[in-house]
Length: 111
Image (tube, rainbow, N blue to C red; front, side, top):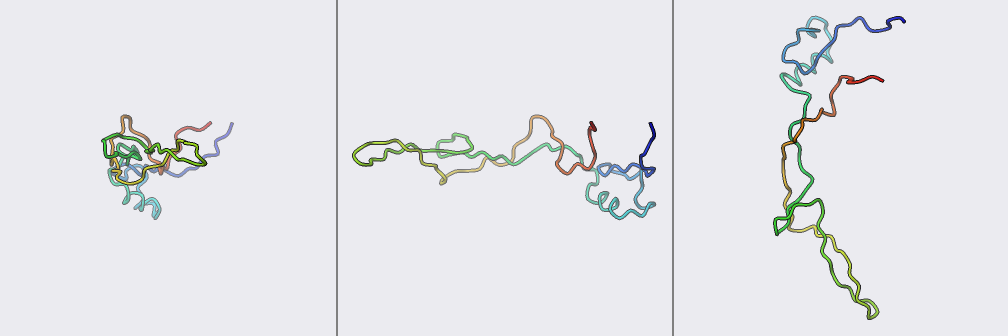
């Protein structure tokens, strides 16, 4: 049971101040970039762009289809045709529960 960990200071890129592992004192350029990129930012995602659309009637769905009747060799057959015109995107929606951002640079759980 030995410790084979690094002796370097822990750096938290999402904190407002760089008090734990001050990158200006260490001279670590990558850490300095992270501090500038995420000043006061949070690792949680609170809003996202929706992938759903509104149609002309105000219905909300991912895809819309219209049933059409096709006559082939004297036989009537129902076929679904995808509607792609006159659709309005839902836009930005607020998430019920915050999610963790994809670029979160810290390991949350180690098995």
